[in-house]
Amino acid sequence: MILDGKKVSEKRLEILKERIEESGLYPRLATVIVGEDPGSQLYVRMKHRACERVGIGSVGIELPEDASTERVLETVARLNRDPDINGILVQLPLPGQVETARVIEAVSPGKDVDGFHPYSLGRLLAGTPVFSPCTPKGIMTILAEYGIETAGKRAVVVGRSIDVGRPMAALLLNADATVTICHSRTQNLADEMRSADILVSAVGKARFVGPDMVGEGATVIDVGINYDENGKLCGDVDFAAVAGKAGAITPVPGGVGPMTIATLMEQTFLAATLRACDPAL
Ligand code: NDP
Image (cartoon, rainbow, N blue to C red):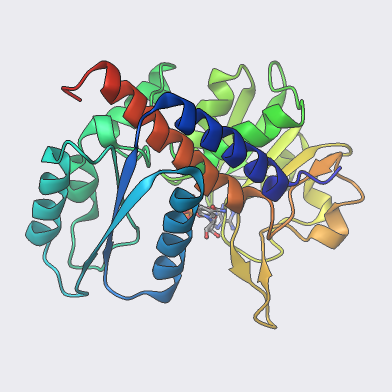
């Protein structure tokens, strides 16, 4: 079974558009981009397009490549104070001179629609999440949409980054899976991976996951965004070789990626609804 993230995201965006219309709210997202990295610019453009589609207002702030940490912090502080802004997204990675952790921590937790603030991550780990990192949360939505059971299943997450691996593991744990996190120092990696009912690869290496690493009938979630030797977009998973063995698998493109943006939209609406209940947020 192909887990069609594009289709699920389209459906979720349509539902969200209706919910926003019915709510009478006008959620607004601010994006902050530092520098001119074409990849980051593309992602930010896609996010603004998604906002437009569902009825979320968006404001794009562009800072120069050599902007200092203080300048970025001032921008975030201004957006924190702005009552018309519900969600703040600082596009990562930031240029080397900017202290990323300070910037992430400066975002007001009530506007942390990207879910990277330590408060958001702490709540996620405590099992009481408000905003979660969008990529892993989007993966949970795909699993739910396709009726893939997590409770009691063995989930193996390869990768331990703050944006994907760690929150993915926490979300799966909160959904009652038995979770193992693997990384570059893991021993017997292929054995660990083969034992998974649900295997999530967030490594960032083309064709990293071959059929010898996948158990018969496993659900395989490919988070990777890589380019092969011909410059073609591909995930971490050798799709052609693994698809026959997996029970369900996400393609790249059209799998996890579209869900990340749909989840960002959902969390921006959530931020607006929470604020409507408590204007102090
Ligand atoms: P990071 O580089 O932050 O993390 C990669 C992880 O993979 C690290 O934990 C690293 O281990 C682990 N790793 C690297 N090599 C190996 C190895 N040989 N064996 C086992 N583990 C290994 O990347 P991200 O988590 O940010 O992203 C991962 C991939 O997902 C990238 O391709 C990225 O582009 C993509 N991505 C896709 C998104 C989407 O929307 N589809 C969103 C975000 C990311 P260690 O910690 O020990 O170094």
